Length: 414
Image (cartoon, rainbow, N blue to C red; front, side, top):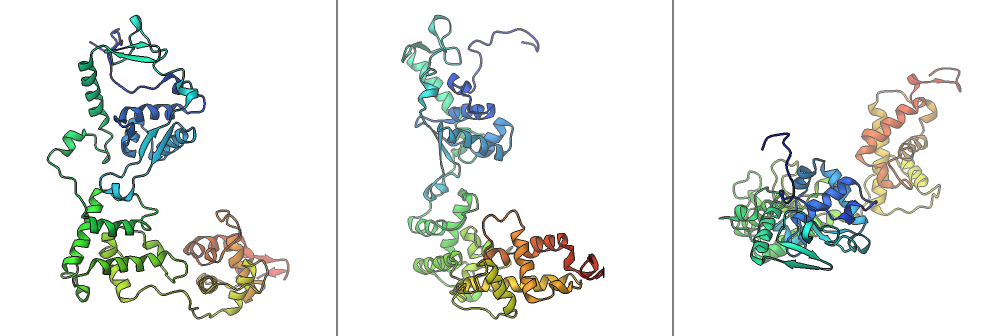
């Protein structure tokens, strides 16, 4: 057959199937309806589908963010249900599981109704069925089973690893790594609080995590790593569990820690990561466990600190912040002083007092639209305050520095 030649498409193609009720449903975008069709194609006998995000982006020719938006459409309309993989299942696949929810208003008029062709046969790729109201009659059981087998193999393209190969080809000669039960218990503890902002670990990372535990137990983890030979010994499961619990304290606001953003990692990176500034948090906590934030650091700018407390507490000078909160206010006072010095510019006398400096820092946070609600101590001491909010506010408020503003108060250029 040549391009442009007339042909009859009847019973000619295989592909996705979208019920009329979905196609005519007014509260879904066209691409969400197309996504529904692909999800049904990947569904197995148990009614579950788990294609990867990459597979869906390739099928629908759009970004992962758009896929997430269209999935949300289907979830909001209670057409599908998404289930994230459990920690135990993460060593097998990392994809969400999609289940289909019955919706009477959509399916009551479209379940094999209105699909009849000549002689009551279904128009499509399955000529082995004919429609009788509320019933399907299989004309040829053997051909029906073969058809289902083909569909199952096609659906396996949406496999947990996002591979385009079917499951029979992918798993041939390949053994899925199984984590020993005791190691799995440690990893479950680890992933119960870590990786909240990271993607679920894939099979390879789980295997690396498990083997890292094995090397710690056998005493071979640090034997060849320069600078860590003092930590080379055979660790017990209970010792590893205690160090994991020490790392968990880094997430507790009552404990002092300066680099929480680096604590979200895989277990093997926690034990040793040559690319990290802290090569091994495992050894770090072993040598120096996290300290409770019951101590207050030295306060070089008490007036600025107290004014910040007053501003955050709406002028209530009796505010009694916790030690951890107090340390944040102290850090904020250091940030505003260090930044104003780093500019190399002379301050306008109006802003030279310590209380005025505190108001500069507070107003920089208050004027930032990305901060919703009231300003907290944490907003005053963040890296984004020093690098973005404070410079932006000082640039907009030109009167802060003498050489940038002609002051009507003094009648001359300051």
